[in-house]
Length: 243
Length: 223
Image (tube, rainbow over all chains, first blue to last red; front, side):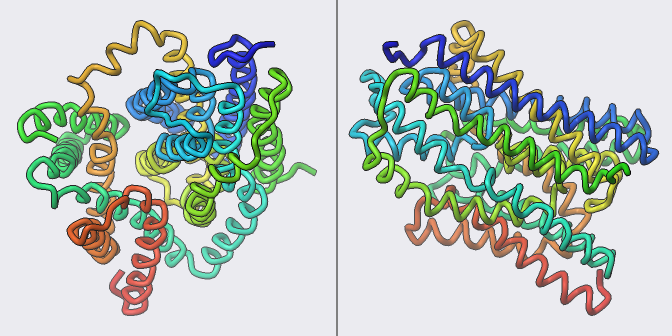
């Protein structure tokens, strides 16, 4: 069979792999739902988690789809579709693909020149192996790490809670810092900071509204709404200050 | 005897991890077989050397950082379906917050798994739909008017998420946020570039700072 970037065979392979990954997600969803019910959790709580998580996912998923578009110009649709639906994220996949493309004597930016079958194979191997660590290590280490956390919580439950909160804070602080990385370039570099502030103020207002009106149901929609408002504000902000 | 959820989830996670892991790795193998292609291992090695040292380190760090945060079920899933920092972890955090469950508890494990599973399914569906409709939606997704919105998804996400967590744990937040701001503001001024790629390593750095400060405050009875 002659190689083509967008041959139906590639889409069939990717479709089968993604069906398996979807089956895993559905299996875990059902397993957790049943365990929750057995534990006495309310159906309404579980249902609300499904709905709010689905709504929350839409905007980031569309941005991931844009990543598929970026990569598809050089690699066709099938491989980016697979790689951005599983394991990686655009930053990783783009870097891995570019590193492999350069090693193969081409570049993702040269989208006018199509990759050969061999280059495509080399790139797909680098993308697969470059981001495989989590996939291998989680089955080996997850039980041990979880066991350690359980032991710590059994010994001192409050300290266990604080450690988990501190881990969350580590993630949030690193990403908040990242937002400030361009401010030394001038006013245009402040764009991300202004967007963050719009989103933060929006969330604070939602918190206030929920407190005053006691509309607790709003909690489920506050984050996705504020995220969208923040993203929308980026359009006039960028037009105003550049960047 | 019926196994507890906590034990069963590790068995399920390992079995499914093996199935989907092998399936994902099979992609290049099938491409090679189908088109009678042979990889150039020199090129592969050169390409891997460019990314593996940093990606494998970040991968190792992510395993130790996100498993305690997310719990077992959602970790088994999130490390297969990817996009952890920009989607799955915030989604699970938001779900646990809304369900008013404390991270680390059995209830949180359930909520986090339901959130990550839902998010994974929705992501796969949206991308599949996008691939199917790629021709009509490309002009919309690539429109210069919308470009700033999609370039600012992380500030919009972490601005909102930050308000919730920092207002609740501000004593834990002060030190890591200050250090991270200093790193990200001062280093670019000194000409250091490429800090975006370091965020995976800086997450546990922030966590260690927060845990160290928390230990001191906890011992003094201030938190």
